[in-house]
Length: 255
Ligand SMILES: [Zn+2]
Image 1: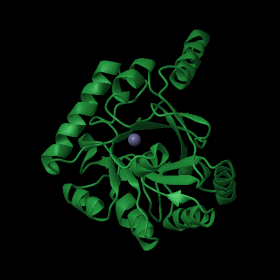
Image 2: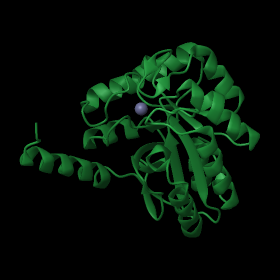
Image 3: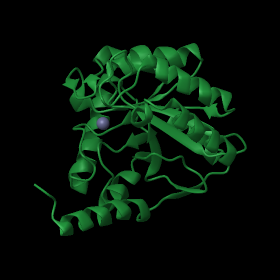
C-alpha cells in the first residue's frame, strides 16, 4: 500500500521539525577533532568483539542500552546479559540510555517515551546501584519535537542519525550520528568522512549494532570495525565515549 501524499508530507515535516526545533546549541570549538564509537541496543558481540578491539587500542566506547531487550534475541543479534554490564564498566566504557522498551522515537508519544527513559534508569540502578545514564540515543527514528523537549532534560546530550559529523553549532538534543553498517561495503567513504571531520575539527559519532563475522543488516565485521578505528586514530582525533567527548567540548571536568 502506498503512503498517501499528505502522510508523506507530514512525515517530512515531522522529521525536519525534529532537526530544527527545541535545539540546545553547543558550539563545537576544539583544537583536536573528536570521534566517538557507539553501539545501539548493546548486542553481546559489540562488547565481546567490538569492545575487545577498542581495548587493544587502549580506547573505550558507548553502549546504548535498552533493559527491556536484555538477554533477548533481537534483529540486531543476541543482546547483553546482566553480567556484561560489569565487564563493560570495568573496561571503562560508557553505558548510555536507549529507552527501556526500545521505543521508536517518532511513533511513541513524548510522555510514554519519557516514562521509558525513567524505567530504563530504574533498571540500571537495580543492577548497578548508583550508576546513571548521562547520554541517550533515539531508537529507530528521529524524535518528535515534544520528545526532544522532555528527554533533553534528562541527559547532557542525545544522538540520532543523519550520516554526518557535528560541526559549527551542534544540537545537544539531537546530535548527528553516522551508522557504520550503511557503508560497510565501502570503507573508503567512511575514511573520507573521518578526514573531513579532522579537517573541520568536528565531532564524528559513529554508531553500529553487532560486530561479528556474519553481522545482521545492522552491524559490521570485526575487520571492518578495526579498519575504521585505525583510520580514526590515524586522523589525529581524540577518541572518547560520548559523555567524555561532551565534557571535553564543554571544557568541564564535572558532570
Ligand atoms: Zn536500537
